[in-house]
Length: 543
Image (tube, rainbow, N blue to C red; front, side):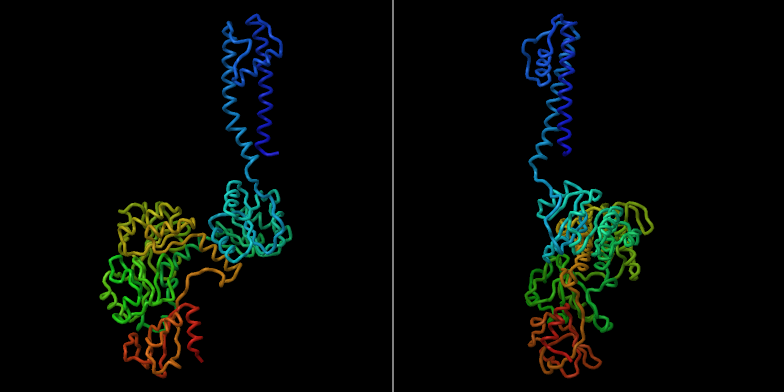
């Protein structure tokens, strides 16, 4: 019996009891106060008419004050019951009777992934699994959340862990179990699954890092702390020392360097294609990528549009990069010195500071609450606080706030005060990522993205996960290219790789004019993603 049915039966019992009591009291009142005795059925008729507020029959006036007060009281009780019955008892009963019933079990299924409790940390994972055609099943204990998931087309089993809901998920045929509740409920779910004899993979998303080991001891195959993962991702986005945009550039020493330059809206480059801009011919630098909306656009093509507010990734000598900045008006070189301003000293912010400090970077932390790493107490939405923190002279601002609304507003404030400074934002709900980008953030990472991709990598393999491409510099021989000019070979068009330098003896060439031709013994440095460098090896085979 459902809760609404029990309440409706209780209401029916109260109404019957109230009818009997008011009828008996009315009989007594009419006999001893009014001197007009009434039998039980006449009194019951009066009680029904009064409590239902439908009016009166034979009895419509009374003389004794106590009788009048009693009649008025019964009338108000009747009005109260009428207004109480519909919203509190009848409407919930009808809603429950006619609304879609939540599934308590599902038909036989196999090789599926069972997710215990839905939340932001598994939203991207569900998308990744569905994209890979892997069946998913969400076990949800909250009725409202379960209904929302059903409306969005997800397979759901509604029930309580303590009532054996995992037994109804065909767990013995599942590919994996992912637990995403509180740490104590996660442990209970893991122990329950193991008691059923489930020997498959169980992955746990842990709130407290100190609970990782107990979760493992409970039977989990792996335990992850999403907030720490997010902190690591934010630090990697912020600092080249933590995660360089271009790997392998170090082999060229100080003769060649990577730089990033923002295209301002009034820049001479804004809106042009790479071919129209002629950057390589005029400056000697090579464009190897462009950050747009938090994504690295690569491989670079002559038709690639140079987006306003985009960030170009450049490779060249120190002189050629300076020439680029002088020739291409309206571009601003990103700083590679000074501190990082971290807004938010919570768990995510502390992880960002830890990783940046370990890489040798300087940090400055602003938070409204005191903490071991906090340098300045104050509200990050206060422009004076940001000015006091030196927002205009930092390498980047990392917004590690616990809510998306202040993150969005802080992004707007920072971009107003320091438009050239990159903003790297933590986002809690994946659906707010685009809003944060619209506010001006250069990079926005949600806890759903990083934890979802990590879990998808564990379940599906790296090749199934949509990750940002990583650029790397590879040294290759000029075998088969001798006597050819770089432009006529169309290496970028054919392979997606850019020729960033040619080493000839002790000389390093980064500018390739009409007279430049590859020679035997040249070492060519190409830059591209893993697919592009692999394609280069197919087009120009190496020993």
